[in-house]
Length: 390
Image 1 (tube, one colour):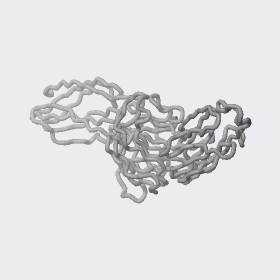
Image 2: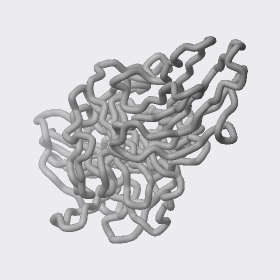
Image 3: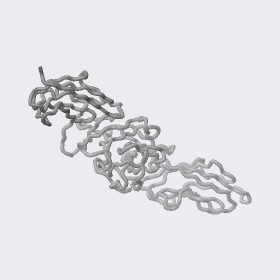
Image 4: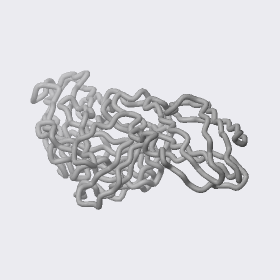
């Protein structure tokens, strides 16, 4: 989660003095004045590979007359220095003059930002892999304000992150090793920002330290690996935060809802708690299996060998948020098995407890345990009672 609106401020009182800059030398963007025959002309340097919109206001202005209505708003082209913005003329040179200046700047050109509502993004992880949305639109932990339409995916640290859309790499931060669930880590999130052809930006956050595989100015294609997921910045655990942002004339860059390409070629809008496959065109097909779609009929005929001699035990096979539960009878005679469960965030496919007759040396299907999409955690415990058939 990150805000792309950047603020700076400077203030001075003078008789005939040079005015300070907003932003230091070496900063990617700064606004600074130069004295010219009784006036001060303000310039901007923009070392970013994308345009920057700038707004300059003066909460206080004494004995100075601006050359343009305030606040000043303009666009500074990419990779430029010395771009003139406006000037302040000293009205009475014998009197003191002063100002308090505030500079806001944000990446991108609002005039060129026209989000394409028909574009289908690729889910930002490996083709054929499936991940859960742990926090969706309006998520309670941090998805509000400019992050309202963000998505968090449960990628383990070091998992490949892929470009959801082709574009130009605008910003990369990869030097942080800090992260945690408090706002104290707001500036520590490693991230990649990519400019798309419609003027929007793809925002990939919480990458691991040195986990960026691209640099500003690189051109990337949809599906290309651009980095590795991590746990930096405001984060309660390893994951990937992704959103698409639009630069606005007020200097903000809010996220917007977008749709993604599904394995069947259609569109999908990921929801919190759901599992989703990344489908990247041009790659081999893969089996699509969602736990939420599994039914008892899919396993009704299951018969397999017992796992452990002289024991009755359960085997759990997880598919997304669904557990497929099997019972194994390792004894040499049939057993009647009764299984009870204590569940949190899970619902059984049949009433509990479940009683099943299991032939000797055989494993049979018992039931399904399906996750509640709203559950923050899944837990279960169970008891087994068994005896010979009578």
